[in-house]
Image (cartoon, rainbow, N blue to C red; front, side):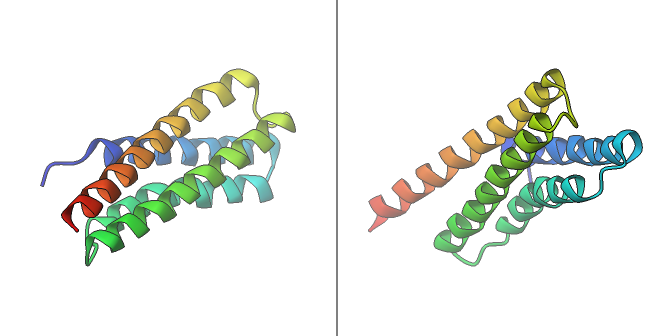
Length: 121
């Protein structure tokens, strides 16, 4: 099976989140916020991967919607890390751009799948 763009992008994003987590632990000894961003940031791709085995189209939409929620939560934690000076603006802009890209992809897939499901009815 060919890997989807959203799966590939979310996996690459997860790798960046793990590296951010390691940086926050090593450089700032930050354990609470770093764990939050690690959990939500890596959940995005894991749930997308899980959605591949959806039992139905509504289940697929539901799984991707959960992944989208995790992406929005990650965006929140990244903003907190920036605004508390754990990461600088350059680092934030770079990783947040990737997060926004995943959010956009998920949003388009969900909307398109919903429209296709509606048209089949």
